[in-house]
Amino acid sequence: MADQLSLLLDSATRFPLPNGLSFSYGTSGFRSDGSVLGSTVHRAGIVAALRSLKTGSTVGLVITASHNPVCDNGVKIADPDGSMMDQSWEPFANALANAPDPNSLAQLVLQFAKDEEIPLGGGQSAEVLLARDTRPTGETLLEAAKQGISSIIGTVAIDMGILTTPELHWMVRCWNNGTKATESDYFAQLSNSFRSLMELAPNDNLNLDTVEKKLIVDGANGVGGFKLEEIKKNITGLEIDVRNTGKEGEGLLNEGCGADFVQKEKFAPCGFGLSDLGIRCASLDGDADRLVFFRLIPNSNNKIELVDGDKILSLFAIFIQEQLRLLEELPARLGVVQTAYANGAATDYIKNLGLEVIFTPTGVKYLHEKALEYDIGLYFEANGHGTILFSKEFLSQLDSANRELSSKLPGSKKQKAASRLVAVTQLINQAVGDALSGLLLVEAILHNKGWSFQKWCDLYQDLPSRQLKVKVADRTAIVTADAETRVVKPAALQELIDIETAKYTHGRCFVRPSGTEDVVRIYAEAATQDSADSLANSVAQHVNQILGSDIKT
Ligand SMILES: CC(=O)N[C@H]1[C@@H](OP(=O)(O)O)O[C@H](CO)[C@@H](O)[C@@H]1O
Ligand SMILES: [Mg+2]
Image 1 (tube, rainbow, N blue to C red):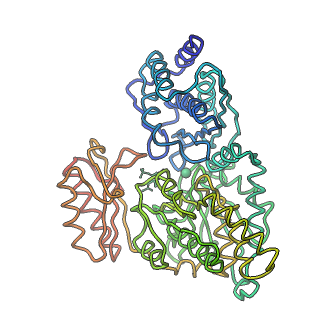
Image 2: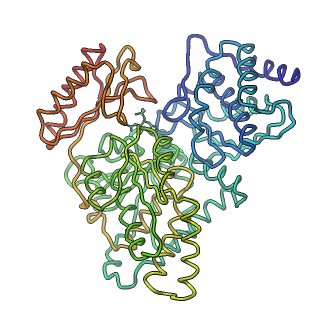
Image 3: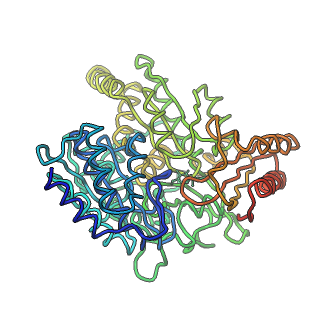
C-alpha cells in the first residue's frame, strides 16, 4: 500500500488543480476549456482504473467535448457494458476532480477503495480502453489520462486512437463480451448488417426505385466524417457524399456546422447551398453520437426542413412494430423513452401507434437506463442522440425464431421480418447512441419502406417551439421534478410559468438548469411560432426577474 500511495502522490503532483476552478461530472462527463483540463482528465483516469478494478472488467475513457467549440474538451467514462459510468460513482468523480492537493487526492482514493472494497496494490489487474476525438488539446489530455490510469498499480491503458465516442463504447462492450472489438470489426458489422437489411426490402414494394439514393452528410469537421468515408467504401445501394470532414481548408470543428447547430438554428450547415436543393441531407455532431436529417427549403436563404431525433425515433418505432406484427409468436414489450424536449406532436404520434411512452430527465444516461427495462427499448433525445436496446432474452428468442423460420418457411413474410429484426439488432449500436449506425439504419428503413424524405417528414407536423437560455447568478437555485417538467424551487416561478402557458393554445413550457453549460434553459411550445416565441420570452423574463440575469438565445 505504501507503493500505491507514493505512486499516487507522485503522479498527482504533476497535474495540480488550476487555481479557482471547480469541475463537475455533468450531463455527459467533465467539460471545460481544453487548456485547464489536465488535472481533471488525469483524475478521471484514476476513476476509470478504480472502476475497472471494482467491476473486474475493462472500462473505457473518451476525451471529447462533443458539439462544444473546438477550444473546449471533456472526458467521460464508459462502464463494462459500454454504457455511461454508473451514476452512483459521480459524487466520487466530482470529489476527486476537485481535491485541492495530492495528499487529499490520495486520501480520497484510499478511503473510497476501502468503502467500495476495491482491491488496491496490484493483486488484481485492470484495463482501460482510451480514445479521443480530433480536438487539438486531445493528445496532451490523453497523456494525462494514461498517467492517471498507471498511478493505480496493476492497471493497463490501451490507446485505441482517434475514434467516435460510440465506437469506443462499442469496443468496450465487445471486449468484455469476448467478441471482435477492433475498428475494422466495427466497420464490418455496420456494412454487413446494412447490406442484409437493404437486401430484405420487400420485392412487392413498387416505390423502391423512387427512393433517392443520394445522401449528403455534414461531418461537423469532426471525427465522424472521415470514419463514414471508410464505411462507405463497403456500402452499395446508397451514394454518400461527406462534407465538412475536417480536412485542411474545410473549416473548424462544429463551427457553423454539425447536428447541434442544424437542430437548434434550423439552418443548413456551411458547405451546403442551392445546388443541394431536393437532396436528403444528414448532420453528425463533433464526436458522432448525434444525428439529424434535413432538406433545404427553396428560396429561403438556407433555411431547412428538419427531421430531428423525435422523427428518427418515430421511424424506428414504426419499423420495429411492423416486423413484430408479422411475428405474432414473438411477444415483446416495447418502450419508447423521451425527454421533455420531445416535440408534443411526436409524443402524440408515438402514443397513437399504441406504444408506451416514458419520460426521463435530460441526458442519455437517464434514457438508456429506462430503455433497459423493456424487451425492446427505443430512446432518443430531440437533438438526435438515441438508439434501440434489445434485452438478452428477446435476442435469444429472436435468434431461435429466425433459425426456425429460415428452415421451415424460408422466404416467407414472417421469416423476412425475423431476419430484418436480426439485422437491426446488429446494425444499431447496443452500447450508446451512434450517429453512423443510426444513419445507416434510417437509410435501410426508408429503402425497405420505399419512403421518400417527404413521406417521412409528413408523418406528423412538429408543433412550433422555441428554446432560450438565460445566464443567472446560480442556476442550481432551480430545482425541478416530474422529469424536469415542473419547477419546485423557487415555487413562485412555476406559478408564473403556469399563468403564461395558460394564455396559449397548445402551450407547454418548462425551465431547467443545463448540465453542460452555466445557463438555465427555457423550452416553449405552442400552436404558432409567434406564440412559442412569446411564451418563451415571457417565461425568460420571469426567470430573469426571480434569479437576476440577461437573456441569450
Ligand atoms: C436541450 C439539450 O439539447 N440538452 C443537451 C445538453 O444537455 P444540457 O443539460 O441541456 O446542457 O447536452 C447533453 C449532452 O450532450 C444532451 O444529452 C442534452 O440533450
Ligand atoms: Mg456528441
